Amino acid sequence: MRKTLDGPAIRQFAQSAAAALTEHRAHLDAANVFPVADRDTGTNAALTVQAGADALAGVGSPTAAEALRVLAGGAARAARGNSGLLLSQVLRGLAERTVDEFTADSVRAGLRRGAELAYAAVSKPVEGTVLTVARAAADAANRVGASLGGAHLGGDANVDGGAGLGGGTEHPGALAAVLRAAVGAAAAAVRATPQQLPILARAGVVDAGGEALLVMLNSLAEVVGLPSCLSAAKDSPGDVGTAKASFGSAGGAASDARSGATSDGGADAGGDEAGSNSSAWPEGDPALGYEVQYLLRAEAPAVAALRDELDAVGDSLAVIEVDEALWSVHVHTPAGEVGAAIDAGVAAGAPERITVVRLSDPTADPTEPIAAPTDPAADPTDHAHPAAEPTGQSVAGRPHESTAVVVVGAGEGLAHLFAAEGAQVVDGQPSVSELGAVIGSARASGAAHVALLPVGEAALPPARAAADQARAAGVDVAVVPARSPLQALAAVAVHDRGRWVGDDVIAMANAAAATRCAQVVLAERDALTSVGPCRSGDALGFIDGDVVQIGAGVRAVALAVVDRLLGTGGELITIVTGRETSPDDVAALRARIADTAPLVEVSVLAGGQGGCPLLIGLE
Image (cartoon, rainbow, N blue to C red):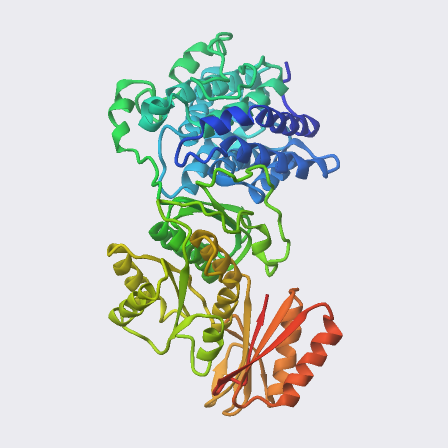
């Protein structure tokens, strides 16, 4: 029996946990009924932990603490679904509470920290899930730690942090005892989940996410030298199909296994009190048929605002901090709000690795890895759900029928560009009633669905209000926000009237989010900008809404802006010329792009806008 774990032992744990989750994947997928029966919990958990193990495999000779940090970080970066996100938070808790070697204190304090992080990640915590199992394991570990005595554990067994983390002399059997209690309590909590979530009881299964956590903790116990609590993997769900009832019978852990599902000072999760409150727990909204997930580079205040916005458009929201100013965002939304969920990320920071999966699609291949473009400007449409072609299937009873696109607030001189792509344009800032009339007109033309593309922040509120009114009247309307006309152009360019409406909305939202936008405008007056003062008549270069260049001529500023855009990589540059644009300036831009990025395709469109000689988009 190991008294502590070093770096190689943590590597063994990572590999063992990934293998065990892969072995039990089919069973866990089949048991996945909450919050959406999308059959991917086992797959998401296995791929998440495998990503952490792969990251750790590339590290030379880490200590246990270093190994856990790499394992947790790799898992968080590649986390899939709610289950993957929350498992990564348990690993992060163990990493944060480990100093040098992995000890009983690491388990005791780490599981408590992991449970705290998991609860904090979820917008609307639900008991009878992996959250309950994580807390039960942490509580049991702390109770056994307290019974062994603080002096044996190197400090106060009931206080996280301080001298207790790695200090003092370990009781020879402390690590095994604490882990035995934690895993036994996790097994008991998993068995109790159907009493907390009626949807589990009706399906005759336990919570798949909680069971995935049990599998991971069992792998850690095995590395220490404890016997496995898991039976052979099953291909179909059952009543805690992987957990042996006999686990925890040795060394005084049986009582922890029976009572380990208790919350802080609460009733046993398997008792009447938990069951009496079960009707209060939501069971997921079947209309929220899309899973949107991305990594986000943003500051904490922007992420807090993002949480509020995503709460308003979806459910099953989870946000975790992966690294400094890097977050993983996960939410379920209706088809009409996929674009809003992505746009909210664009407004908060720089989203990467955007994926959109149709949860109700029975043909989806959940084993396909989330391919990770390392460049934030890389086109995320390459990594969206693969079923993007017409299928003739229906979702929520809606058949495969045509979709009309209405662009709201495109801007002066640009309407003909959208009309050429088959979109209807509403100029200016129309009222909700005016937009309602336009939606009615689009429906009367024979379209079964309408996609509203509001351009800019001012156009978004009336578009959403009009969409809400139309939906209440039974009209299927999706809102795909665009921060600039170039994002709207990118969205309209990928629109396919004959494609299934959900896939069409996803394609438009991804195209808009993947487009970086620049413009060169002429200053109307003297002003102070973020890069210095400008004079009336100066050329100002903007990228994604921020001034980045000031100059006396349009050409010099445009060349500087294009150089900045190309520095992030891309495949297509679209140049929209205005009334004041010189053909020589366009020729100079083409030459610069050909010299510095010969593989980038260039498209030039005559816009006719005033006061803005150039609009430049990079996809």
